[in-house]
Amino acid sequence: MAKNILTENFSELLNGAVTAKIDINVGDGNLMIDPLASSEQVLARGTLQYLEKQGLPAHTLASSNGQTTFMLKAGRGGQPWFRFPWSACNGATEWQIYLNPTVSSDLAAHSDGGNLKLDLTGMLIARVSAETGGGNVNLVLPEDAADLSVAVRTGGGNVTVEMGSDTKGINIVNAKSGAGNALVRIPNSIAARIHAATGLGKVIIDPRFIKTDDNTYQSSDFDGAANRVEMIVHSGAGNVTVDTK
Image 1 (cartoon, rainbow, N blue to C red):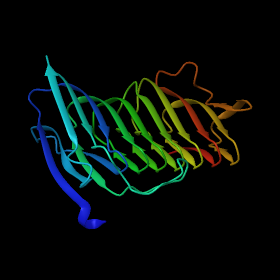
Image 2 (cartoon, helix red, strand yellow):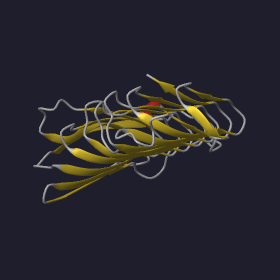
Image 3 (cartoon, rainbow, N blue to C red):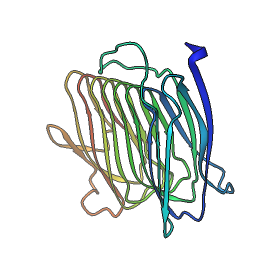
């Protein structure tokens, strides 16, 4: 199989971009995203593996008045073996992508069945969507994000979401797994209302959150808090955990 895996290096110039919508679809593979050095004058760069029969990944870049839309999608074709959609998988290929941290971005990341590892430390992020058919998702959010909208989902793997220590404003987090464990870590400085449920596993919630009904937990200061998060954490079969850091 190794001889059928090829590699492409890419780089997209910054060209004055101030805000960006970034949509990355790795196909069957694994995806890793990290921040660039802030001095680099590129919007994104990285290394993309692809199977020979897939062809090169498709790039689309459009800019207007400081708003950039960047799309990156794997070619057709994929792993030659069958797998159940709820099975946690490791992709046959890997994409390592670096994004410019000075550009305010809406980010969508998708894999059909591989793992997603997104380290957004130090980046300007407003919205994040991360979804995989069966792999694990590990998402680290910016330290000082504000008014975030986050949606993370996997069919069968584990989900981990770590919120930044200086998160501000009104934030929304959805973290769901079909069969794996779902874990969210939130800073002690932010109030929270948590809707947590699992079909077969355990629900483990930090004791600073008071249970208000069968599936809802809330910090005592939530209603009047300027900095807060409303979250849904759900698993079909695994454990659901919300920790304070």
